[in-house]
Image: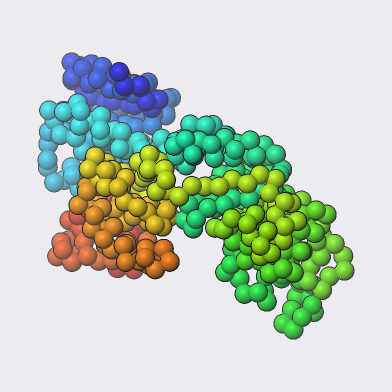
Length: 449
């Protein structure tokens, strides 16, 4: 038997027998389930119970479903509302679109379809709940965000243990395996979670700017230093500083990082007064740092000072069982960003994802899912993913660099293409993109179309 989902459902229907039958079906999948016979009664229950999802008939006495939806929108604008109706009048449909109704389910109601629609509409709510649990350090939530393969369960256990300390740590693994994401999660589980989490990629900084960027400078320290500047070590005070590509730091900077970690203080460029450094350091590299230290390419004393714990993240190709878990997490994340109900992923599409080698690792998977969600209808199919992966393959061979357009550029193009395909009809274009009309209008305004 499928476990029930902890999700508050309010079902509104004026016909008693139908209301009782559908409530029984919903109670088999969700809990708790509240029922109301009309809009007035529903609003009373809504104000008292604050359900996560509202499912309602349209044509009801005293107050119809559309009027009820409008009032719910004023109380809780983000609550998904699903309307059930046998009517298809254009006026009702237009008003529902303007109100941002999440979905329609036709009468007579297909119970399986209704449960699927509720589950998809509620996915962002459940995702936010999982993210909240992750911040509280719950094992199940970390598995949803990182994977549940044996290799990742070991990583999760190490991350949970180190997060309760102030130890520095090193994260290792190929480019794109999720080192920065794990660093952020560890910070979020630590006692420093309410303080800054500052990230710097040392491989992307010009050598001449690294010292000033990390430690700041005093006025007049060098030509162009017309005023004092705080460095990232100071900006991260009380929190966590994530040093990505730490192996790219020049030897002189490695020495200064070592001093700051050991003495818990540092000197800005040109400064004579030390600045306190109450921070936790998380360093990352796509190289094996102990080997780099023993071959003279990295300070061995800094390696041991930073490596209170060393966590190595395996490449995605070595943990295939994590791919469906991560794909769903990225699907929900992209759907939240696009303000749409998450599409389902067909079994053959999951199989295709599992067979792909993922040279770009988790970062590549996230990019593929983002693009798939942008163009998907109710489902992401094998054909959809194959077309996307085909465009990724040439880029993956060039040092595993993904040369995709930014999500914003893709979204703008998608809006323009939908308008062209619909002959400029905005409602039809919104339908083609599978977004509600109010969201589509916001997209038009955002991209000045």
